[in-house]
Image (cartoon, rainbow, N blue to C red):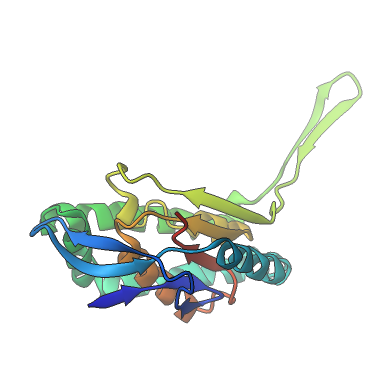
Length: 206
């Protein structure tokens, strides 16, 4: 039976807690895989890995980060049907419905490709008496996301860290069993598109 570990520092990492959760195929009700449940030290390792990698990624100019996202989109388009079937096997939806969800995830990544423009600051001269206003957008550092089991499109990539990646953040996702294999597949592809190791870290903590 397939065993799903964590994804830390741009590579698959086996779990060490000895605890696993079942990944069901909603279409048949059968267990199709086992996912490792992270212990506290594994979560801390993922966070430390992201913290170490974040400064270098944030220092990469937005144009280069956008090129990474464009390459990532090329991989999604190339494997679109395979991703839809994978999503169907993890969420139980029909393949045509899964294709629609993948497409909506693609739209999020397409939005992130415009990050050089989206990161521009603003300046307002004369906003008030002797008052000028300006805004500067800068990376916050390591950010985390927790996707809900009931969110219909969580496996499609809509919750994927495309926007944080473009912004220069480090994303650590805490995910549930549903859709984790699809997420890991997308993260592997982002690593292939020159995302720095440590940019993405995924673990299942329970």
